[in-house]
Image (cartoon, rainbow, N blue to C red; front, top):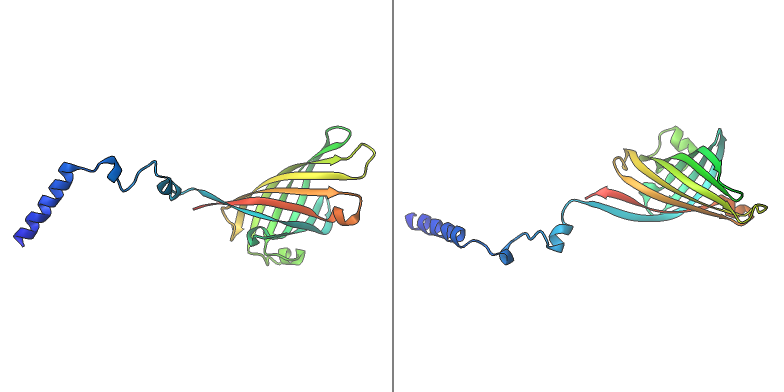
Length: 184
């Protein structure tokens, strides 16, 4: 037993005295793999379409956001907080949105039949083809935070785009894309 202890002590002392060269380090702060394993925010991309459900009045419109990520899919309440003309063809739009994840109908939201909730603020521009035109494009950017359930604490960014070409079908669809960011 004394021999084992002596060999162990000699091994430890040799390790301390000889040290490790920089090339022998187990963790190199410049190592790409080591840095990728550190805690950081990881974005997940999503895309989808947003179709109207109901105009509830008082500036509130309900939509259904269908995306390829269930964490941003559900009934959304949109409220305009400001509508401001910029020039003859451009209007600035701002507002707030709540997305009730997993809800399929307004009744689901009322009955709290959803699994998470996002609160978003957004700003966008509606630009007409010309001052006399009824056709327009809307592009809005939103930033939100998960405030309930499965999305609590997550953050996300959205971009919504509508190209209204004069047909009723084009007024009923926003295309959305964005990213959800979570801590790893």
